Image (tube, rainbow, N blue to C red; front, side, top):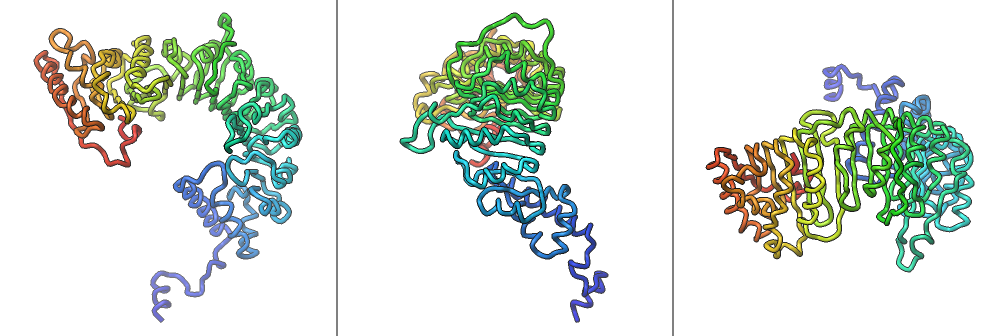
Length: 512
């Protein structure tokens, strides 16, 4: 009786069931289930590229009743219905469900052999939409794989292939024994709708010829990462291959760390090759390679440029932004220096991309002052690019085993060189081993007081320190610097802060 009264008050018939809902309402509910499950997949950090909960959910929903199955199958595009071939059981669904698009995954990470389910799935060429696979180690399976991939894949939109140069299991063969070079016949059968191509650790020196064949007119994302020495591609060949990709928006070129002595320098061409749609470019390698590549191409729409060098580059980073109409004026900088690298991110106070330019320099040795010196030399060649930076954040992270020996290199005057290019900075934020930066500031007295950071008005730092020795130096040095600026007529306001909770102490959490 109570339920009936409640139903009347809510204007709901007590006899209404979910089967009474129109097809469009059911379809909306199913679409909502897809959005929620994909969101849960992101929040649970499920390991990509193995499929998340949605394929399991739609299979279960389709098995509830005939009507639900009819509603779902009537709108496969709206619900993004696909068959995920991840094992021998799932491949059997190819003959059960309608001819939905097929995604192929290995059944476990770091698998480098072809299961029969993979071969069976790849034989449905007209339905394959995505492939994620490791290059087989054994020669017979590798030849079988490359033979299959020679045929046409008219529905393929994403291809992700990876290999490894180091064995996962102790006692396995190393390096060249594991690497298999993709032949020039790979994908020769055409994949006209391919939008994303990812090669990780895979030697494919003839890739530029494939790209320039006009086969991939729809390609928008190209990731060629961790290129081994066996797969070296010259800058000239790479530039030539890229020019046919008029819809390319994201490009990543990354080499493994090996000695490159084969880069031949030629005079720059009279006309550069244009990548009209490119907005994001990632590069990892040596300075000479990037210079040779950039001498031949332009990307007028470039919005994000991330670079990682193996050693200190000999270049003016202004040359990097000349290739874009959007990367030209920066107002904030974020510097991170650790035992292995120095990194600077240059960004804007407003805009869709917070830090459009990211430059990272890897180096040998563990002393952070060495990496700071390398970065300071690079910045000194790019003063005009930094003239508009008004906000600067610097995080120093020294290795734990050097914590008790900070006095040896904490007073290194070269730390001041890190500040010199930032003549317009008004706000400075320090994190990590702040004593590296504050200790040398005490030398800036008298006429030298505005030698670095002449426009500084506010400095933020944390009262708790990552080392006891840093705490010993931090307070007196900061007081001397603040007093010297006040007496010179260029006062600086100090803002001591409480250290964030342990979970938010990452460099990203402390950036401006």
